[in-house]
Length: 183
Image (cartoon, rainbow, N blue to C red; front, top):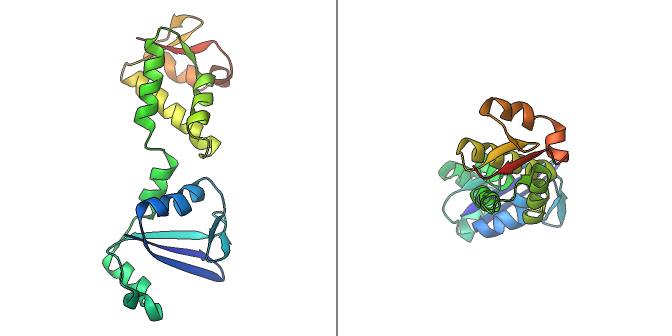
């Protein structure tokens, strides 16, 4: 079970006994995307508010009353805020995204890096643009190091030493000169 505290001076809300699915859908995913979260008839802005998440056993109604719930949670539970926020920031779909890229390259058609950004936007429209760019960049680097794809510029295969300079240029992401292809 998960328990959450939302703070935005002078307001405070505590939510107890959330299942993981509800926690992620109603609070964590919107929070990392920068959207205001609505809870207890209030809007909690991630830029102004603070969220704290604990994981522990379910609390009985009698344990929550008179302000005892949060102290019980912090005493017996484990804080998991950063872990859950990080999970939501980098979709667990990284491996499936990498697989999809590798499959497309295996078809024999090189893929432009800009097309991968479009693909990430189609697959994860709820995720911030910067996080989609990070997903694509991470997938490309991992695929290159795993030797599941190769990087080509104007049809010529780039060596490992050329990957960094090529990928750090905006032209690689906006143009068609740099592409991923099957190894």
